[in-house]
Each structure stands twice: as C-alpha cells, then as structure tokens.
Amino acid sequence: MLQQISDISSEIERNGFYVFKNSLEPQLVDKARAEIQAWLDRDIRERQDGGVEAAWFTGDAGISILTKPTQILLDAYAKSPALDLLVEQVLSDPLSSGVLKQLAGENIKFRGYNVQRMTGEPDPRPMIGISPNPHEWHRDSPGEFGIALFLEDIPGPENGATSLVPGSHYFPYCPRWNCLFGPPFKTKEGRGGLDFFLRFNIANRMLGRRINGRATGAYGKQGDFYFFINDVWHGREPNMNGRAGIKFMIGAFPADEPFPDKVVPPDEETLAKLPPLVRKAASLASPAPSSETPNTILQRVRGHRAENAPANIFKMAQYERQFAESLSRLAYKFSEGMRTLTSPFAGRFPWSAKS
Image (cartoon, rainbow, N blue to C red; front, side, top):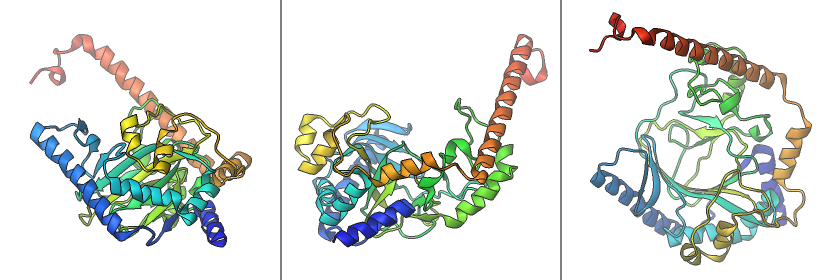
C-alpha cells in the first residue's frame, strides 16, 4: 500500500493528475447518478415552466448555470446521499486518502461541490487560433486541487472531457491572461481584444504547437475518479458526439490555505446530513492547522516555480500577448474618441440616422 501511494503521488507530482480506475462501488455510483439526474432534470423543468432564459438560476435544485454546452449545479451538498457517501469513500479509503495527504497535507477543505452534465449540443473547437478547445486552457486559484468523480462514462476525444496538459503545473503562468491561443481574448480590463492577434502571432503558435502535442484528457468510466492540481492547464475538449455525461467536481484546498474569495459553508441543517469527513471538509471556511506532512506536492510545485525562471518561449508568448493588449487598448480609446467626436452630429449623417 505504501508503495502504491508513493507511485501514484509521484505520477501526480510529475503530470499533475491521476485517474483511479474501478475504485467506487458500482451500485452506489448508479444510485448517485440517478439521484443527481433527478435534480438536473428538475432544474430543466423549472426553467422551462418559468420561461427562464438566463444562464444563472435559483430554484428547488439550488443555484444552477445552464449554457449551450453544459449544465452545472453549484454546491450540491446533501442533494444525493449516495454521492456524499462516494465522496466519503474517496476521503477515507487508505489508498486515495494516503495520496491526498501527500498532495495537500493532513486536512483539506472544500471550496466547490458541483455537478456538471454535458447537454449533448455540438461544442466544436474555435474557428480562430491554435487552441483545440472550446473552453480555453486556464488555471484556477493558486493552491487549489480538484477531485472529480465519473457518474457516467466520459470516453476519449471529442466527447467534452476535461482537457489536461501533463506537466503544465510547472509552467510559469495562466495561459488565459498571458497567451494568445484562442478566443475569448480579453484585456485585463475585461474588454474584448483585437481578434487579429489570435490569427497572426508567432511565439504563441510555436508554444501552442508544443502544448497541443502534449495535451490529453480526463477520460474515464462510470465509477472512476481523479485528482488533479488546478495549476495544470486545463479546459474542455470539443463535444461532437452528442455526449451528455455527468461528472461531479470538488474544488479543494489544504486546510491551512486561505480561500481566494469568500466561501460560505453549508448551513448546519445541511452539514448534519453529510458523512463525517465530508462534513469536516465542507465546514472549514477559514484557515486551520493542516499538515503533519510539511513537504507536500503542492508546496514543492510552488517552490519549483519560484526558484526556476521560465523558458524563453513562455516569455516571448507573454510579451506578444502584452503587445496585443496594448494595441487593443489603443484601438478601444481611438474608437471611444471617435464616438465622442461624432456624437454632437448624431442624426445629421446617413450612418447615424434612425432606421
């Protein structure tokens, strides 16, 4: 067992993720899938009955987000007793709990407890840029790691799996804000950048080709689960086969790490319904003593990035992005200036006349 823990921990440290195969009780997984599917279907019915078109909605199923490719239930604590028991198994099993201790320390806390279902709608790769994913590669918050359970099969490429780049947790930055791989291209002010730079760039295409050659996905069968370090560059692969698989995802932190934002734990009534280890992780909203394991994988990854300068190709891609943002800002200021200049003459020219 100790050797297994060591081997799996080494793979997570090297690649940033690991899939545990055939690890959960099949009957309990089936029950959890049925319970969760009932909530997902209820959310859809409520939206239809109320004529809700907004992505965000609060109803009997809780807070949900529905977009063309995905349906998400947020903070699904106690929605499915079977699902909560599956999470308890992951936290208590000698093998997976041993790996968790190597990854994050003795105690962990949950930031998110979410269900995702693919809608089955076509979700192709972007039309511009080198990125292969409709949901672009990105990182989550520093120090975060994920636990994901497959409630249904999510097989190989083109089925909406989570895209993962092995080893990218050692890369120097988040690609969403530092690269030009594909849409959406937003400046740091949140405005749209010039798509011209997604089509015409040099360093980002060089880096993107390297990344594309390494990328894989979190593929698995019903009852598998995986751990991954959220500093791994990840996104969502295209879904071109109508796949509507259900996956459960936890965002977690070492207990002694502060959350990057305000996290409100479940109320006491909900906490009382949870198994003990899940309840403990869900209730830790503030930093707490964590680690009898002073040298965790997350700590070593952070130390490695702090001590090692990024390779030149990452610097070049970042400079190219900064240049693109600067010109995009100038273009925005110019367009705003022209709008201000022409506004006193609104209605006097053909292009400003009301139709």
